[in-house]
Length: 390
Image (cartoon, rainbow, N blue to C red; front, side, top):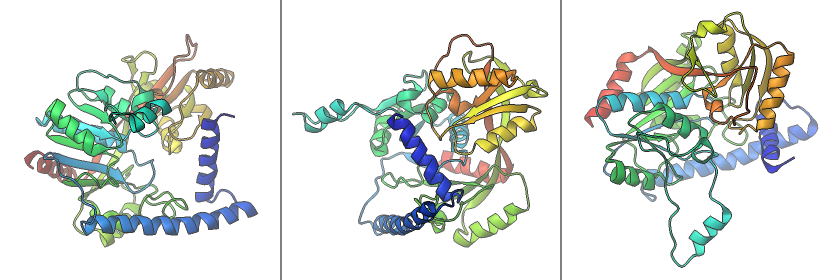
């Protein structure tokens, strides 16, 4: 077993502990240990926020409008489609937009590269990863990260840049692309760069898990920090009665933020290895489908397929952001064939991490998802107008 698979297995083990799916004596001991660690993590997180609030640590304004889009929990809120819709609309409104991402799980520079830059005679900064300059995609998903690459392929006229230091990224975007609007992808916890508007996403189907912070829960910071949000997007909304209770809970922590309900709506399916070849969702009706994914919430993806008439005959779920190997895809394709599948479905985010596997009797398709506003359209329009006139 290589290091990547070991890390993924450990990740799945700890997720099992968090979700209380493991009940052995050792698991219970580990759960107590994680709870103790989460108390220290929480204190450290709140101390960090206090340092910024008191201006002991100063965030930086760089002379450009900054919109932060993020969440309290680790993954699963459907953030990328929301970033995409904001970038598209602001570009259409005449703003010069750049999306700044940390490039989670993108391929890092070699150790030799890091050492020569750290200890060399001239301490050179690592070059900025320009995934897209707004006209063409310049990096693959391995070096860009799956979400930045996906944004780059779907956004015309919008630059997409990757680096852990997003102050540096912002300055680069302003200098090289004339950017006047920066969108911080997954930026709610990134405080070094001063944000003018904070947009927080909350998964309405599972808002805060067990309400514990890492590593006992999946929250990056305590729920009370919702107070920093200017707009709250309730993603995966379906108009259920539980939303009324969720909104009441949110209002206890933040009375000023506008709340917008939205859902992730499938639009069409497209071939993974023949981009541009699309079919209507009606193509799924009555067909036997094999589903493969590596996302935080695979259940929602599989539910979409069933809701559009597909019969799922085989599934394979990997850890979030798993990078597929050719052998894994061939093995699943053979399994799907034995189960009578007529096609293989995956998510758009997973599709960018799938290597070519040569000719296949079973076609690979991904499901294209976009955001639909269900309630609070006027608040969404006000948010866009506020950005455009700042």
